[in-house]
Each structure stands twice: as structure tokens, then as C-alpha cells.
Image (cartoon, rainbow, N blue to C red; front, side):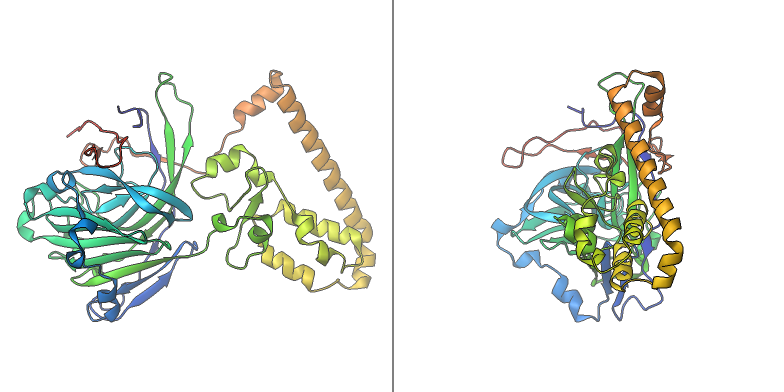
Length: 435
């Protein structure tokens, strides 16, 4: 029953993340910040902001039929349960239809479960060592009205620090991708919560997963998890009646055609893979598939997109050189910059005449190089058992992302996924406890 849990090493990489500036009084004015990686823009609101009350979802005013008190999570410690959403929720550009709610104040957004749910792929309003089983008044409840999913950790207390008082907070997932963290009762400053027995995090995170060869038995699974982005929130701004609102920014994944992918002003660094019919910058949950299908090397629809611009320039070799250079440096030069260069009109005719021979030679060399490369690839694919191609295929691995082991961190941060009653969604995985 535990075949979805990893039996070999897992790895974890933290890339540069964004933190909210704490120079303002956390109890007063709103503060906004935009993500440098173009995933989310967020704002924080204090008790004095009207927006704080507008964002809070009062579950007590809803009909009982609209609220689900999770019986298992409300009476256990370090457990997680899968819940199906009634709508597709966009998270980092990926549409999710199910999530995993954990007793520790966070939602796991990954597709494959493992014990290190606290590591990455989370929505964490306040990840900490909460124990809802301590009191009958402590509950984990949620509501889904088709446009908004809200989970509330209600009157939960910290393990072995129950005397500090109950915490009440929410995470709200809106159909349009907006995420809201609401805090009603925070009896203890977050900076004083001990992270020795359980990670303490507030923010968002996503990662992609890649398969690695394993020396273990054939049925063992070894995967590498890379966290490609994280948003960390300044926890000093978390007080009673405060809130954070995250607004998703456009991503490459939302473009469904080559033209939109390459010309949209909403996104940058996007590339179109004709084989997969997908727009991406290569850094998302589909990265392994993107690499397996050689999408970084694939160039599509450039001539079609710029056919109207090409006719404006008299010197044909120069146009060809510009297009080829863009194709080979697509990741370094934004498409909008390239388009601007073309729309600026033809360069000085005198300069064109003087450099025509040089550029023509460069173009010819590039054509020969591309032809030889295609010939080599064809030979390797059609003669896989020949020694040189077989060596090259073995050596062709992705070494762009260094990694760090996090398996041997003890059992204190592991979670088990619980199995629910028949009226809930079936097919859950139950994991043995190691603590």
C-alpha cells in the first residue's frame, strides 16, 4: 500500500526566493511586493486595513452542509489527508484538482506523496508542529463552494506548548488562482515557535521531479525533487487579524499557441515546443518531459511569426542571420527585444554592403554546422549499439541542477497520509508511522 512512497534517496534544492520587506509596522498599513521570478504578486494587510476583514471567510455563517469538519485530522497529529477540489485550481501555472491538507498548518500541492511533505510544493499559511488531537475544540475544517476552497485550522495548539494558547488561521484558494492567508488568533509571535521538531514556514513553494537510475531492486523508486521557486513571507507581520493576498502572474504555460507563446507581452523567456504543443520557459513541473523531447533545442514557427517583418528588410542574408542567431540564443535574448530590432527597420545600407560577405560566410557556416549536427543525431538514433553513440547516450544527462540530500533528517518532520471514510474520495494511501 506504500508503493507511492520513495524507497531511495530524495534530493532537494532551494533556489533564491523572495521575502517581504519588514520595514513597516505589522499592525498598520498594507505592504505589497512583486515576485522577481514572475509567479506571484502579494500584499500584506494589518488589523487596521479594511481589506483584512473582507478577505476573512467566516465559516460560522455558512450552512452546516457547506462545511466539512475533517474527523481524522481534527483528532490526530502529523497526519495528512487528500481532498478533491470542485474546480481546477491554477498553482504556478499548473492546474490541480486535488490537494492534501496536513495537521501542521499547510496544504501539500504535489502530485506524488512522500514523508517529506514539509520540504516543498506547499501552500503554508503557518506551517508548524500543531496537534489538533490535544483538545476537542481543535478542528481542521474546510468548505468548497465551486469558486472558493477554504481550509481553517481552528483553535489548534502547538505540540508540547499547549499552554501558549490556540491558533486560528485559514488558507483560501480562489478559482482564479488567488491565494489568501487569514490570521484570526495568533497568541505567540511566529519567530518564537520552535522549529526543532517541525519546520516553521510561511509562504508558497513549487518543485519539479526527475527520475534517476537506481541500484535498488526494480520495484524501488528513486526520484529527485528540485524546488525551483519559493516565496517566504516576513513572519513578523503575522498578528491577530492580519492577512496576505497572493495574486498569480501570467506564466508561459497559459499560452496555447506558438504565436501567443513567442509574442505575448505578458510573459518573457517563453519557448514553444511543437512536439509537446506546449509553451514553457523550461522551469516547471513538466521539466523532465521538456528535456526528454529535446524542447530546448527545438525552434518552431519563427519564420511564420516574423514573415511580415522579414519583407521589410532589403538584405536577405542579414535577415537570415538575425533569425538564426535568435533561434540559437532564445534563452538569452527576449523575443520582445528581437521583435523591436526588426520593427526598427533596415540598418544603414552602407554597413550592409560592407558586411554582406562576412555575414553570408557566417550563415553558410551555421547551415553546415546544423546539417552535421542533424546527421550525427540521426546516426546515433539509428545505430544505438555502436560504441561511440552508445557512450554519448549514456553520458547525456542533466547536470544543470545541483542537489542536496534531505532524507536523513530523522522522523520528526514526516507525515502519514490517512485513509478516510467511504463518503470521501477513494484511493488514498496509508503510510506507516515512523515516530
